Length: 406
Image (cartoon, rainbow, N blue to C red; front, side, top):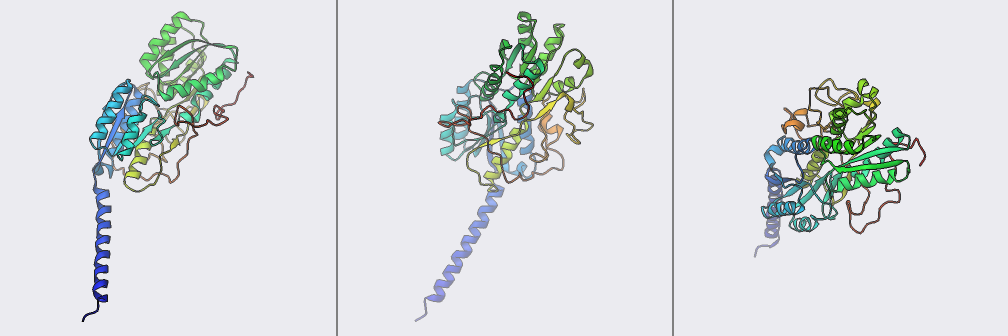
């Protein structure tokens, strides 16, 4: 009678070989799989949204993602129900991941939760949601509202009539910015908000709405603006009004104006801060590293740093990248509405100017790994979490110090 041990040993070796082969095949499949990714925009139609979308498109066309990503863009508009319906269609179509600028921090939660249960990764950029299964990649918790408001108060010496040029109604970005700004303004009885309007982060709309406010309040002393701020400067010029201190975001036009001696002589002061379109690319690469098994990361809130460029720090670039400390392109190279913060050499070395303007990959570039660590964002109720407690120093100034007392 033959011993069973050699047979068992052979069977065990065969099983081990099969498992090894299965593992190798599985790993190869993960590399070769075509991931179905949806880029879901709510509000669109301004330079910021176009650049953020173009960055994702450029990365998706960069090796090796050009062989492993099937990217579909969907623009649903400013109605939350339309974006809910878009998400539902994406989930039903078998999405592996949805990278999105959400129109609401709360209205989309139910459909996002359903998608997560079905294995869909949800990554938001810039704007946030409070559904805990989503990943929020945003700079809004880094203090744009309070820091720019304090900068404006400093320029005005603590008193004056101001306009608030806001973003899109109901969006978490606009809410967080305005809440932070009003936290500062309310500390200064000499600051009077005489006009408040929604400009949809668009230069043309900002120009139109600011012109209306100027007609009613020609004695305005300063403007606190979100994206679209260059339109506010144009409205002042068109009205023959003296320029006033303005705090805005990152448009090429604003930065050039802040550094222009002629504009300064007419009264323009301020700071360029605000939302980097590069957040979309960072979120997309994080998603892909998770999908391809290169990163393990539980759903969380991730903070992107706040850019901060006062007038005396504006430096014009000579080439097509932000190099040697430059942070704005010369007039004529890009539109005045171009949002400058598209480059990040640490997170997005693959990008070029053509990536942001046209959604084209950079010739010769390949996707580079992200740093191992991410910066966790603080919890902010109604912005990025449910049933959570805000930090005691929620609106703490991080970039600018008061030069006038409340």
